[in-house]
Structure formats: C-alpha cells, structure tokens
Length: 485
Image (spheres, rainbow, N blue to C red):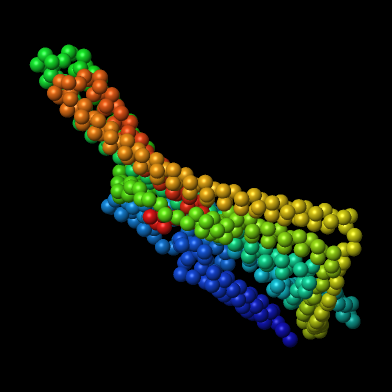
C-alpha cells in the first residue's frame, strides 16, 4: 500500500522533473535563437538575462556592465553604440520582443498534457458507551482515519487546429516584434546622427562667429586709426563698434545653442554624457555613389515596416483558419489514478482505481457567432494586405525621393562652397580697398554681411546633407552612410 510519505515523495519528484524539463526547454529555445548574444537579422546586440529557476524573464537589460564613456572625443559610432544600450524608447521595443517568449511557451504548452496531483488526510475520534453485565456504563473511544490521493493527466488531442495555428502565430508575433525592433534601431540611429551633426554644426557656427569677431575687431582698429588721421568720420568708428557688439551677442547665442544641442544628443543617447564632452571632427561631405534601383529592391525585400506587416498578415491568416476550423469537434483524452483509505485503524478499507476517458464535443449552432468572428478576421487580413500594398508604394517612393534630395543637397553644397569662396575674396578686396581709402565703411560692412551669410549657408548645407543621407538610410532599412562614400 502507498502511504502518506510515499505520496508526498512522489508529488515532489514529479514536480522536480517538470521544473527541470521546462527549464531545459526554455534554455534551449533561448540559446538556439540568440547565438553569442546577438539578435537575429540585426547587427546590434540583444541583451537579455533569464532566471530559469523562477521560469520567467527578469527585467534586466544586460548582465554586463555598460561600456564607459571614453574620455577622448566621441565618434558617431560610439554615440550610436551608447544609444542602442541606453535609449529608453529603444529599450521599450526590446522589452516588447522579450515579452513574446511567454506566448511561445504557452503555445508549446498546448501540446503538453495537463497534470494534477491531489492528496487529503483526515482523522476522527468517536466516544461510545459500553454497559457491563452489572449495569455499569463506561465510555470507549474509536479512532477512524481516511485519506485519498489522485493523479490525473488530460490532453486535448484535437482542438480545431488552434494548437497548431496558435504556435505559428506566436512565432509570427516574435518575427513582427523583431522587425519593429529593427525599425526602432533605424529611427534611433537617424535621431543620433541628426543630433550628432547638429552639435558639430553649432560648434562650427560658433567658431566662424568668433573668427568674424576677430576680423571685426581688426576693422574697428583700422576705422579708429583712419579717424585719428582724419581720413574718415566718427560714423565709421560707431558702425564698426555696433557690428562688433552685434557679433558678440551672436557668439553668446551660438554658445547657448552648442550647450543645448549637446544636451539633446545626451538625451537621445540615454544620458551619461552631460554637456562637457567633445565630438570627433566628422563634419565633411563626399560625393554619394548609389545604385538607386538596387536600394529600392533591397528596401522592398528587407524594410522593417514591410516585414512587420507581412508577419501581421500571417497571424491574421492563422486566426482566420482557426475560425474556419471552429466548426469541427473538439477531442480530449484523460487518464486518472486514485486511491482512497478509510475505516478504523483495526479494520482499514482500501480502494484503488484507474480510469481512461475519451470525449468529443461539437458546437453545432452558436447563433452565427463564429460566422461574425470569421468575417471580422477576413476583413482584418484584407485591410492588412491593402496596408502592405500602400506601404510598399510609399517605401519605393521615399527611397527615390530621398536619393534625389541627397543629390540636391550635395550639388547645393558645392554651389554654396563656391559662393562662400567668392564672398571671402570680395571681403578681402573690400578690406584692402578700405585700408587704402578707396572704399567706404558701408561697402565693407556689406561685404562682411555677405560673407557671414555665405559662411552660415555653407555650414548648414553640410548638416542638411547628412540629414538627407540619414533619411535615405532610414527609408532603405539600413545605414547607407559608409556605402555612400
């Protein structure tokens, strides 16, 4: 006979075996899908940490310490790497992907039998009178015990194919979340590049403003010299002083903009940079060389937005098939083992039993509810297909338009560079003429203003070019800045 201790040991043993099997399955799934800590179809690392003893993923992003910020000038690649680890919005997308593992485990669990184990024990003592032949009454007690234990297994053999399509949809959901994570990476890289080059732009504008302030100081000195010699009036000196004061105010504005743009970059990266860091000098332009037809073909095959919609369509088709098969019966098998023990100690009563059942249930009519659900699922799938066609046209259009914009920005930069060189030559000539006394302060100030505007336009054109290059990469679905060189 099986006693209380035996049942407890059996229960603990079965529980331990179940934990080990499930933990091994989870570990094998994670290990097979994230080799070397990399997210499939992504050049960036995917950080995760799982507590298999508790059988659920922790909220940690990584068990490794984040790479410290280098003390030297930060490069663009270093800023992107830091942002991929620290940016809160990107980490939200990463957590959304991690959440799909629960759906996959639940889907696999539909193919595993449900197991239940119960045990109960009770003991009671009853006192009853006994009368002796002499008429004396005494009381005696009788102790009775009862226990029961059951072990049951149940398995849904066929549930209108919901098990199969549910498992497929769980993997399609994970693929869709991966595409969304890639899209998040593209948007983040685009934001980092824009913030990075904006800092460099404001720094270049600040340096140009300081250089122009030095030149205005020289102009003021020359105006004062010529005024002391009686060659010009006090008006030239006043005008030179006004120009220098305006330039100093502009320098203060650019200094504030440099700090603000550094804080913007720090926010995009996810913090930790502050505002005292410096950036490497990557503020330059090279002629782009792209095969636009090849980029369009690549974007139509691998763009994250298109991949995500394709996975959503497959999920919708799976839901539609489950709805169509809902008219079939549900088959379920159960197996059970039970043991009962009751009676008094000196006269125990044991009962043991086994049972196997096989049931089939069929919902014949449900008020057309299944029809309504199937029609909604079909409409959802068709809407997603229309959205996919619309997005496909939009992706192709955006790639071609962004490429044309990149070419325009490059040609615009060449034109502005030529204008800046000519404005600089004109300013040098006007300064020489003013020094010789053959030009007025009005003409010199005009040449100075023309050069200042040409310098600002030239610096802004470099920033606009890099923004257009980053936008092209976002529309293609990957970083194309290196290839474009």
